[in-house]
Length: 214
Ligand SMILES: Cc1ncc(COP(=O)(O)OP(=O)(O)O)c(N)n1
Ligand SMILES: Cc1nc(C(=O)O)sc1CCOP(=O)(O)O
Ligand SMILES: [Mg+2]
Image 1 (cartoon, rainbow, N blue to C red):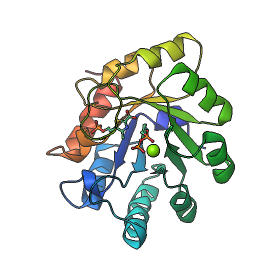
Image 2 (cartoon, rainbow, N blue to C red):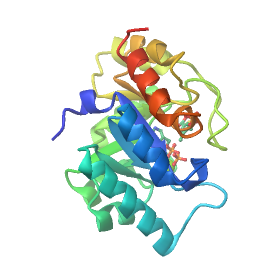
Image 3 (cartoon, rainbow, N blue to C red):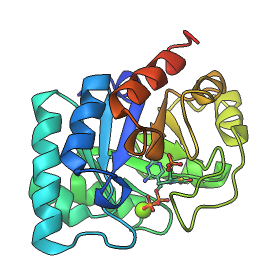
Image 4 (cartoon, protein in one colour):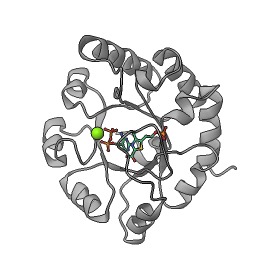
């Protein structure tokens, strides 16, 4: 498998509702900028369903494949299996971690955690990486919890938990380095790339920040 820690550095999450232009165009520019991981998250008002959702996922998966970028599906385990995606990302309100692990075999399993207990339990049940957020305030996820900064990332690292971690929520090239400095392996973003004037330049700037060059 890919070196997950390395692959999670610049993790782009996107669905049609996050885009100001054609989703494939946005992804193309993000790939040109150097994203290292991708999650298809088709959610929110106006989200596609059924055949249209499948067709978009398939198209974006093809683009990721061409550039050896892992392609994960958010929430929809059946779609991930149908597409033979590289993995899935689930949260605490989705199917239990152990059940999803059972369904997907050795595909990549990302789990959102908000507390130390959720983290240890997800680890025991088979998570491959954690998504922790919202680190900063975000308007992108309607039901996001209040932002809590990097405290949980720091607490997990201080306690020797070395599973790959990405921060999420309100992250951009100005604040990404602080998330890495707290112990995360990468940053996951939606609007910092999908709403950028230049998704390619925004991705480049994020990469520089993650690498600590700014
Ligand atoms: C990398 C990453 N981290 C966290 C999330 C949020 O997952 P969840 O809490 O299940 O919320 P939804 O994204 O399903 O609305 C994520 N998707 N990716
Ligand atoms: C999908 C998601 N999950 C979050 C969490 O806290 O678990 S915050 C979030 C939205 C991230 O979007 P943006 O980069 O535009 O802030
Ligand atoms: Mg979810």
